[in-house]
Amino acid sequence: MAETLNIAVDIMGGDYAPQAIVEGVGEALDMYPDRFRLFLVGEPTQMEAELRRIGKWGDARLELVPATETIGMGEHPVAAVRKKRNSSINVAINLVRTGKASAIFSAGSTGAVVASAFFKLSMLPGIERPGIAAVLPTETDRFLLLDAGATVDCTPLNLLHYATMGSIYASTILKKENPKVGLLSNGTEEGKGNRLTQQAFPLLQEAKNLNFIGNVEGHDLFSDNVDVVVCDGFVGNVTLKSAEQLAKALGHIIKHSIMGKLQWKLGGLLSKGAFNEVRKRTDAAEVGGCPLLGVAGVCIIGHGISNAKAVRNGIRVAGECIEARLNDTIAEQIRSLGIKEQ
Image 1 (cartoon, rainbow, N blue to C red):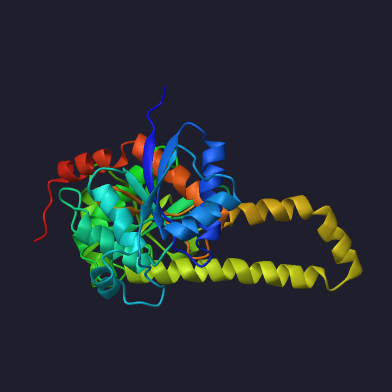
Image 2: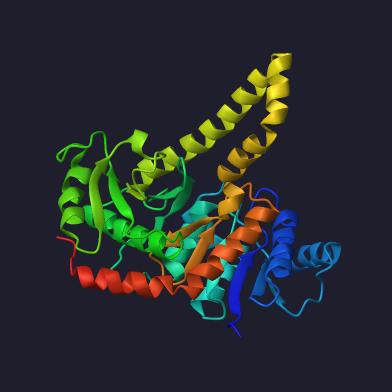
């Protein structure tokens, strides 16, 4: 019998909390009945009401952990983490720090989750800064973008670590064989880019544990040319949010155009299955959340608009990272690099 996986879930984080988060918890328990033990962190009265609503009150696979404070999306992340010590994010992270849980899922403030994890969980040996890994669709598959916003100002060594962690995640979780790693730049030629990318290039090129294909440009990101795209958190976050909005805009443009003529409406009805498939492949809820790589504990950050499906899949991904012993592999690979900041 497989080992039960202990995961802390921030019930108060997200635009649709606590309702959508609790619904996602219920879906995870139904879909994986013997896989998880979940620690639900939040305001007890609200958690009880929502669990009763979905018929999961008293479920032996759940344990309620009270948290009297919530960190809002508009609050300064570091200040809020330090001031609101009994926030649901801090309490959930503490469960991982003390070993009661092996992972956390939160759709709350990304900055607060990153700050709390950085302060409360030690970094994996040799890693200085955590990185958010975002899974995005390509023409036929998926690729990984990191850092997507955890560390805005990076060093060349940080980018090498992101490349290593991203390659491991792509191979163990996304099941990509010998994943291709690219450095995001404004040209494919060696020597292109800003000072950071120019200094990072030889580090990635010399790393024997990487299948480094050199610089990649923006038009390579969704074309199946690369599996792991490495950049600093500023560039990565702008890229991620631009891609999310472009996907939404294209959906509206296509829908508006189809509704413009009767024959296009008929064609749209005939193509409904194809449109649904595209929608599924570009739906962030299918991914569930972004792993925060580099911290000593599995941390999955959900989108602020996470619905029940996103929460269910975020819990699933957290379980996959635990079972794959992802952090052990990352620590081993980083140690084998033997490179320290100059």
